[in-house]
Length: 182
Picture 1 (spheres, helix red, strand yellow):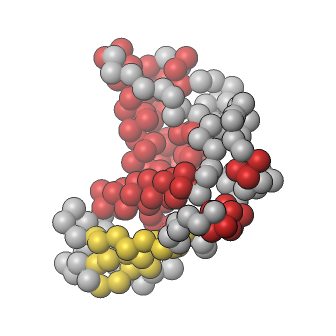
Picture 2: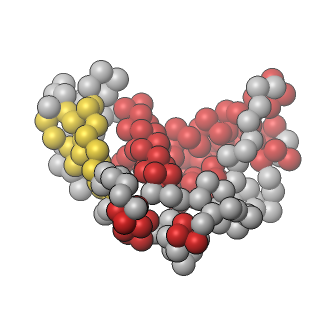
Picture 3: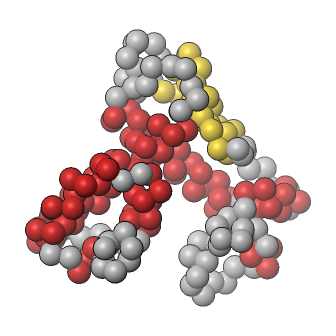
């Protein structure tokens, strides 16, 4: 019911939230993203919402780990553990989000009122998301240099099974990660 939008997380009873938490591991990346996008404005430090906070933490861990796994699917290297994949997925999401802001993506959701300019509106795809190609062309015309590729050192917290330090190349269009030995 959370996934279909019939029920909001904040209105759910703690016992139901705790029971649903174990099912999160069964959901694909797209469903985790849909759940998390509906709960971005839910943040509380209240101890009465421990189950809710645990649920969101579980979504985040699974979401970022699965994002990294998907982007590394074509790589022929041994994958690091879950915590390293979580870190890489989170880092990737932050970089791609910052890139969209630099390209002029509206900061509000497409369905809400926004003061976005017509140039920004023309960068939206048919589904309301950001069209990276249109936004990139628009940014280039305005003299903004927004990179399409980032170099991400993967040492320290990133534990590779074979002990070799690596570097990632994050490409924004098409979205992919290439792994290089450092």
